[in-house]
Each structure stands twice: as structure tokens, then as C-alpha cells.
Length: 49
Image (cartoon, rainbow, N blue to C red; front, side, top):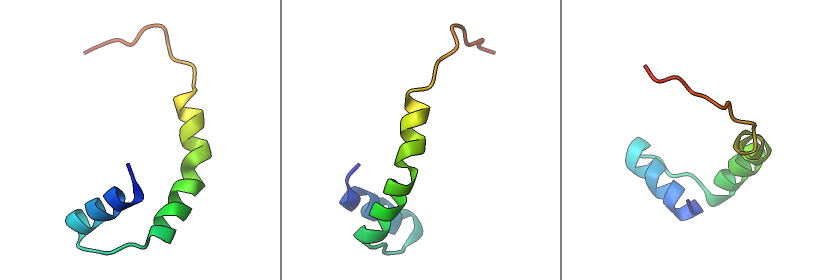
């Protein structure tokens, strides 16, 4: 998602305006954690209920 898309979603859902700088700071702050999650080892089997 682009910063503008994120701004649009936040405005639509929460009726609030958020600066592009704040969005960049937040996404930069969690980027390492997201990358680690994306690269985690997956289990060979996932049971379905």
C-alpha cells in the first residue's frame, strides 16, 4: 500500500487525517519485525478444524 492509500483508509475508517511523515515513521519502525515474520520457518502441517 502507498502512503496515500494508508491515509485514505485511516480517514475513511477513523475520520482522521494522518501526515505522511507519521505513516513513514510507523512503517519504518515495524519493517524489521514484518520482514522477520515473512521469513519465518513454516510448519510442515497445519491442522484444519
